[in-house]
Length: 298
Image 1: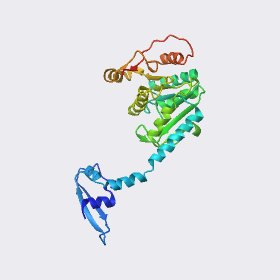
Image 2 (image 1 turned 180 degrees about the vertical axis):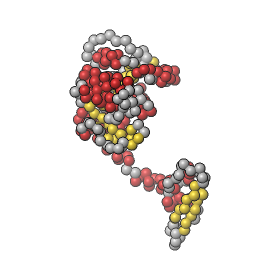
Image 3 (image 1 turned 45 degrees about the horizontal axis):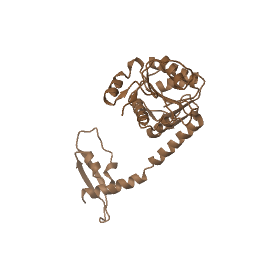
Image 4 (image 1 turned 135 degrees about the vertical axis):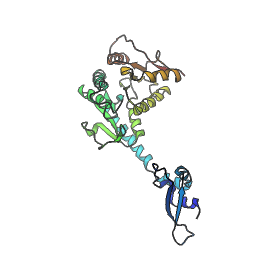
């Protein structure tokens, strides 16, 4: 029996390859065909497992794709995210590090910021319902006595969480997502303004890859006018201790982000600046402000 026949029978892409071994991979594959009356062991010596993966039959891959349940699971999770937003209401979404704990200066600043913003706007405060700065934003909003919602993920800060339950939020205030795509849908939908009455916005706190992933996703939607085209949605970057200064330099040089025109993209370095900005943005109080405002040049 040839190699392609063996691959067709068992699907080599399902084999447990040992990627940490530098030795030659040797697998025994039991395979039978309609032409054979008995099972015959076949030993394949493969120096490159990636080639074996590509050798899998396209027919087998098509069948496997049809059997995958993840598309339906993602759809269900997105619908649950939308339902949670419908119940709690749209508001301000906080994106930030899961690793900066209560003893960190940025944690203290974030907790204070979320408390003051919640008092000003009175809307729901949303986050990834995780630890670090997400927790700081949650606690700050709760201190203000305002509603809080969250989209928790099963894996946060590079580690699988021991439980799907939040340590102190009631179960009706958050949703634990298995898929990051569903979580992103929730975070985006939570800031979409459908009327002038709604007060929404995005506040990007110091963070790593996950924070940047979510932030750039929303920035792209703003640039494409999928968010804020009818009613502006403030996007605020909190540059605590010049945390994002290098990134801002890169964006200005290579992506033509400028800080002088748009009313939607804001750069703040201190909490009082943001408080004044929020008041002006939603006409809560007529206050002259001094801050730089980035915009995209097409």
